[in-house]
Image 1 (cartoon, rainbow, N blue to C red):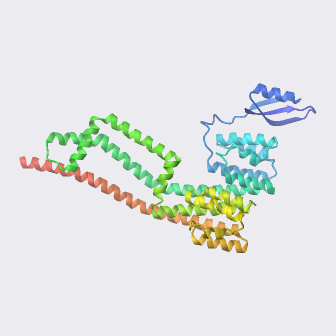
Image 2 (cartoon, rainbow, N blue to C red):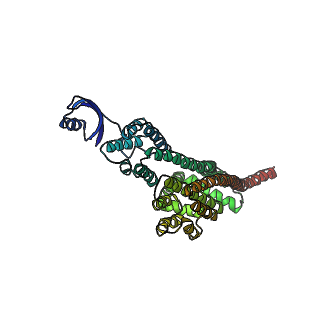
Image 3 (tube, helix red, strand yellow):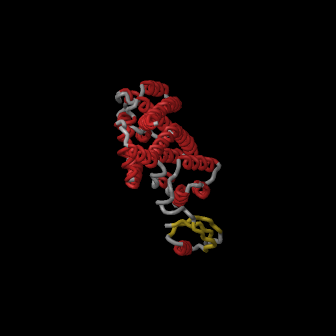
Length: 403
C-alpha cells in the first residue's frame, strides 16, 4: 500500500489537505470520491525503495527526530503534522518511510506508541516505553526531550569506544596487508634467487623459502584462500553466537572486562533513571533497563530485579544478593537514593561517574595497546629480516672469498 497526499473539496465546499493510503493512484481517487470528495490534486509520497535497499536508521537520526518533534509539540503543532514535516525533511529514507506511515496511522486514531511499535528494528523497547509513559501522563514533548538527550549520550559513548579502536584496527590491517604483499610478491622471487645458488641455509630460512616456492607456484590458489579467509572472518563476526564467543574471550582480559562492566553499569543506571523520571513503574523500568546490559551473565541477574521488587524487596538489597554483579559503590549509592527518595538523581550521578570512568579506561587501554602492537610489529619484521638477511650475507661472503 502506498501513501498519497491530496487536496480535495468536501461536500460543504471546504478545501482539505490530507494523506490517504491505497494500492494505486486510481484506487486513491476512487476512495476519495466514494467519500463525496472532489479531488483537486493527488501526489504519491515517496517513502524510499524496498526494505532491502532502504538502509537503517542511525542513532543520530533518531535523536534529531526526537528533538525536533519535542520542539514542534511544545510549539502547539499537531502530532501528525509534526511527523509529516520531520518525515519529509529527514535525510534517512528508512526513517522517512516510517514517519509518514506513523503519521497516517495517528490520523486514523492509532496511538503514537502503538504505531511506533510496528517498527521494532527502528525503535527499541526503551524508546517505546518512554513514549507510552509520555502519552499516559500527557507530557509527550518532555518524553521526546529526554529521548533526544539520552540517544545523543549513548551515541557519544559508542563513538568513543569505536574511536579508541580505530588506531589499533588501522595498524593491524596494515600488518595483514604487508604480510599478504610479502607472501604473494616478495617471497616467491627471493625463493627463486636462493634456490638457484644452492646454499646451505638455516632451517627457518628454508621453511620461509618453501612457503615462497608454494605461493609462487600457486599464486591464484593462495589469493583465493586469502579471499575466503576474509569472507569467513566477516561472516564470523556477523553471527551473534560467534561474536559473543569472541567477546567472551576478550573479556577474560582484566582491563577489557573492567571497561565492559563500566559501560553496562553506566547504561543501566542512565536508562533506569530516565524511565523512572518519566513516570514508568519501577518494575517495568527495571525489566526494560536490563535489556541495555551487554553481558549475558549480568543481564540474566538484572532480569530478576523486577521480580524481587514486585515481592516488596528493595533494589539495593537485591543488588547485594546478586553475586557482586555490580560494584559495591553502586549498591551503596542506590541504597542512599532509596532512603532519601531521590533514586533517579543518584542513578544519573552514577551514570555520569561511570561514563567518565569509561573515558579513562579507554585512554589507558589504547595507550597500552599501542606499544604492544609496535613490539609485535618489531619482533615480526626483525625475525623476517634476520632469517633473510643472514643468508644474503653468507652469499656475499662466499663471493668475496672466491675473489
